[in-house]
Image (cartoon, rainbow, N blue to C red; front, side, top):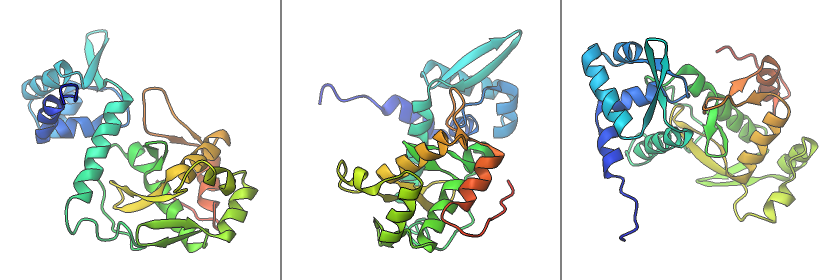
Length: 244
């Protein structure tokens, strides 16, 4: 175990509620001034600077100098992914909070302090997460493209045929993977979205179609007007108007 990575320092930094709130506010990859972060977390400017200094020295944040102003952002996208994984683990380890995650009942709960762009559509590993993804997963179930029994997710014949029409071929994915799809818990929605190789393939389809794009140093996906319409029509014969 001598080569095991030491995570205690990072865990200590994230254990403080004010510092974790700052990390949430930066999860979409944006850069924010210390004054803004102080306002968001209810801290005085001096206290906010002290917390930011610890996050900075711990390697979780980086600072950008813009004239006389200092802007803070996550040091790397992987840090945002790690914080999100901790949020998902918190939900998974809390009895009672999982009610509704692996069924079709939506629980209207939102993660506080996370930027709205991150809640709408974001990278979750190599697939799509957020409200857009959770809505899509529900439509795939309702349209009988997917069949879910407890935690096991299978692609139906109807789904395989429909996905092939979009250029996503289940047989090609099946040759390389045992589990083609899974229900990935979404920390902001408290309901699942599509994960696994199929989730990755669907995200690639959306990005190649120009419906989604990923800005540099960000995990929040940008959705075009056409993309919002097309994704909300995916697996649905009736157009759904969604307002964010």
